[in-house]
Amino acid sequence: MKLLSVEAARAAMVAEAQPLAAETIPLSAAVGRVLAHDVSAVRAQPPFTNSAMDGWAVRAADTPGSLAIVGESAAGHGYEGVLAAGQAIRIFTGAALPGGADSVVIQENATREGEQVSVPKAAPGDNIRDAGKDFQAGDVLLTAGTRIDPWRLSLAASAGRAELGVRRKLRIAILSTGEEIVEAPATPGPFQIYDSGSPALQVMCEAWGAQASRLSGVRDQLDAVVEAMREAEADLIVTVGGASVGDHDLVRTAAEALGIQYRVESVAVRPGKPTFFGVLADGRRLLGLPGNPASAFVCAELFLKPLIAAYGGAPHQPRMASARLAEPLAANGPREHWMRAKLTYEAGGITVHPYRDQDSSLITVFAAADALLVRPPSAPASAAGDLVEVLRLDRAG
Image (cartoon, rainbow, N blue to C red; front, side):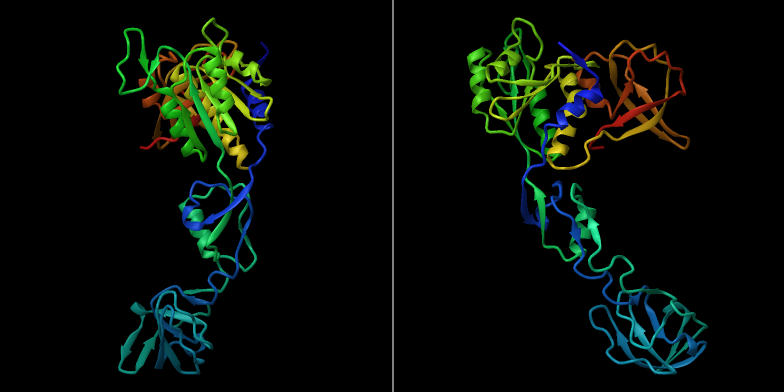
């Protein structure tokens, strides 16, 4: 089988991911979704010049001096008159600046005596927010392909949007194979283990913006695997295990029975060499991940997450960062190695601590890791303090 580099394999996969159809949803349901259309402002923000502080709206030319108080401007209830010479208006933060006023004196710097207020020297523009300071009507605030988070949702709301056009969610069906796998709370046999891969992958997919389901109860027989794949209602089928070429690895054979055209046959990566990807005869895509949970999770970060992003029309390149090695590393082998690691943050920057045992079956190591340290193929030995590239993982804390 032809081995592709990680970058070439990812490019081949995302090339098959055409952005999904758009749908309109309420703004309140948009967090985590990817915009299908640009979001433009329907009016300026702020829509009127307003006060940045509680204080007194004045004409700078009248300061310093004692001014007559002629009214009040509060948020949502502006003063409708025009300020004349020698006058002041009590004003509050966010309230519209009255006509004729060009400055706000903060209340701590003024002294009120009955219906007069004494103010110090002020300059035009003091403590004022101009209309349109944040954005103007018609400005594009969010572009298609942007994933909505609470801060971006706030921006869309300030632009007057009650609904957003987003890409529909990618439908993913996860199929975990292997007679040795059982799901809690079932009691495993003497040669069985609990399924820890597919439950986590389902949650990962949903966190990354997809709609994921698991195909359960599939017997470890070729006809059963073929039938499960054929009946899966999904845009993308993700298999866990059975991706290699052993006598008990059925996934490739099942995929070939469904007419798969391979785009990726194998990847020069550690862990995860058996990973493959292709297009079934009916147009659905299939991503085959290794069975060891850590291998599956690494390859999900490298390939599945970018695939989900590409289907939404969002950027799909992993966001890398530089960090300094906490300890030396031996020379790397011929495959790109993604090592589970822990980051610490200090005044001098980020330090990365790779775990000593990188066995791909160790779930405890992946549960503790918050980053993947990448070592290029045939990289020479690295010393403590050398700069390396890391991929930060989305962790809860």
